Length: 415
Image 1 (cartoon, rainbow, N blue to C red):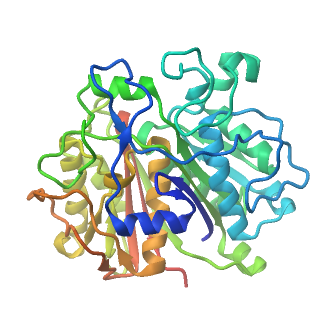
Image 2 (cartoon, one colour; image 1 turned 120 degrees about the vertical axis):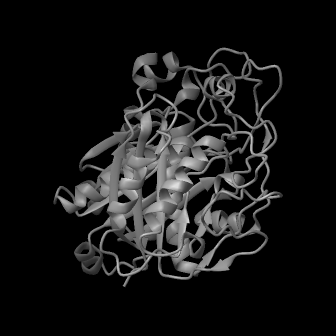
């Protein structure tokens, strides 16, 4: 059960801002704060300014800091995630005592990369786009190695909120967030925790953008996943958090459930370090696994679709083939939120799950943005211009990543 959610994105802070931004479907990226060593200044979807996760000036809105350490330093990604977790924990109404027994499952690709990267050519200061903690990695953390380990972000978040249960970091590239949600569910299903905070986040990285451009994976204008003229992804900053708990725990606490995780599955292409396996067989297997035995097909699919033509086609074909065992894929609405949020890397899969929960809450599928010439090969229905009603009360989420790591989750309306 999902009993709390929090979000920080290019739309601003909060899940209300996230939903409103998805419905407007008009967000465009802004120039990046650094040229990333390229011959042009790329665009990105910037997150809002956030308070450092170790700022001693006081708690974030909705944050319960009784007995919580505020002295574990972190960078921009930690700050973004801390803001999202504060909202989710506040909405779920969790006490410090409940958090002390809770688990933490966190997805990130690069962790607090801003602690090592120069800010627009200067020495590393941790002051990347949007602003966060200052001081170099050495000054702030006693050494680069500790601050740059991806699992260090989870340590920052656990210390900040007093989360004392199982603590795991998932870093399966772009599917890290989807894996983090699935792993959180595994912790509950196996009895290791009754309640798990699942979250994901990543901040702007000059190295990441520069590398992606050198592989010709970046669109120099904006992200347009469903358009025939799509030319690659556009990166985005953001963080999102969800409170997962067992049905018994939610009932015991009297918590309101926003959505329920019906099934989840993983697979791996084992094909190429970056490119998906062309037939999409392993992704299709994961989708078929979560759909096995369901009473009806999902009403919508929140796709990983990021604007990279080959990857988008493999994903859509695999999802469509699995859906076709239940329904004509054209009767299922496809959503590609990266068109207005950018690719948020380790946060992307958690954003997909939070968006699925919002779709179920509101009974609407947001319109897809920046579509002038619709990809004729996509087997799904693609709403544009206006939201459409959710035809059936369940939503599929697809997460894929470098290395062929696939994670698929099926969400349904809470009973």
